[in-house]
Length: 274
Image (cartoon, rainbow, N blue to C red; front, side):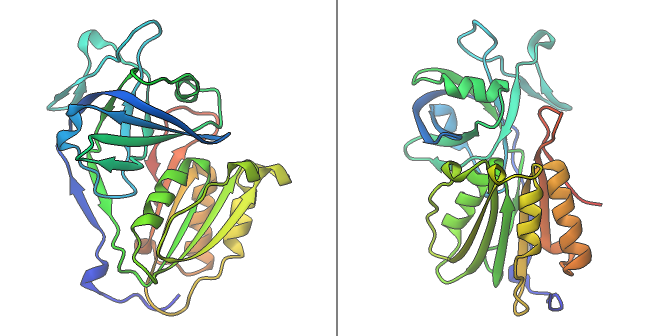
């Protein structure tokens, strides 16, 4: 990669938001593929909701079995405080789309396991309740970079789709994505010049192997300033980051790598760095 320039318009910024918890209702449920379900949430609690980055994540709280509404915490000085120590099932999600005027928030469920989130989404109906918390902050990655590389699996599709929609016309972007099979592909809307690579686990190999191979085969422009964003299974994305930084010369300040889930673990969402 070319030497990194010190351009003010390329400064990645962290923005903090007040921690708030909101009770919302399902307005619409829309299967996008056999592997991805979009749920539109609504409610007046969204009047001051903020999501400044495609990379944001919110905590979604699910009702206990037999309950109508989820147990929501209060924001305490040391973090969330749950009544009587009750902790509902919660998972992290990307705010896929937010319409302040309509008070609508879209989140998308990757149906890649039989966990509580996927189980709830498979049976979700209009009128049901969910709770959300956050986002507590945003990592705002400028669109001014000369080129962008987006890498991920099924769980990263909402963030990748949102990023592609916000990139300006003519911007160079490549997206390398691993999903279960061709039926898991979605259509992206973008004004950018998109080079799209799909890889499928159905073609064989271990999970993440196809993604890493595709990244190894990806061309990185040698002109201009670029930024790499990668998210998905922890071990896979860690390997992707290591490869790009050690073998392809990507500066560590020019890559954002996040674990959206971890094989054999639950409720994992973390930044991957040294």
